[in-house]
Image (cartoon, rainbow, N blue to C red; front, side, top):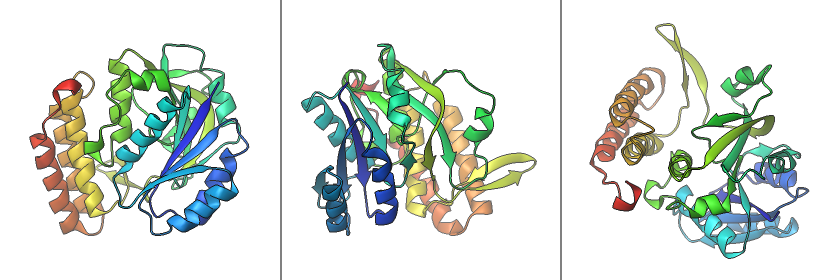
Length: 284
C-alpha cells in the first residue's frame, strides 16, 4: 500500500513541527510539506531535508484548501493509494498508520479518522465519549488532521474547494465523499494530539459550550464557510438551522470573548457573504 502524509504549513512553530514530523518518519509513509508562504520557510526546508521529507511552496498564503488540493493532486499523479493529512501542530501516535491500514481494505470506506486528544482540555469530548467504546463508528465528518483518505474516493469528488480558503474545508470534502457514496469511519483508537484554537468551557444558561477564542478574521471565514457549506450540501446540513446557529455563535463570542466589536463585525460580515455566495453548478 502506497501512502503519503501531507502537511500544509504557514509560519509554524518549528519545535512543534519537528515533534510532529518525528512521530511520522518512522511509519510506512512518504511525507510532503506544502508551505503557504511562511516567513520561516528556510527553517521548514532545513527540517524537512534532515528528515527526508519533500517540500513544495508558494510565495503567499493561498489557504489551507489550496494546499490540501496540491497535496492530493500530487498523490494522484504519483499513484498513492491513501493520504494522511495533518495540521502543522498536531502530533500523531506512532502506531496510527498501521491502525488505519487494518481498515483500508473495505472499498466502501472513503476516509478514516480516530479519537482525538485536545491539548486545551483535561478531557475532550472525544476522550469522554471514548471511554468504554470499542466499536467502529460511521460519521458524517472529521477534521483534516488525522484524516486518512482513499485517493480513489477523493478522485470521485470535485476535490477541495479553494474558494473556502480556511475553515470547514475538511467538512466540505467529507460531505463530498458521502455524496459520492463512500463511508467515513472513526476507529476506536486515540491516535492524535491536537489543539483547536485556545478553547475554554463556558456555561450559557446551564448549557455547556466551548469558546475557541479565534481571531476576528477567522470568525469571518468560520461564519461564511459554514453557511456556504450548508448550501452546497442541504441534504446533510440545513441552511436555515446553520444560519441560526451561526448567529447564536456570534452572540456567544460577543459575550465571552475579547475583541468583541471586531469579532461581531467580521462574524456578521461572514454570515452575509455566506448567504450571498453562489454554489458552483457542479457542486449542487
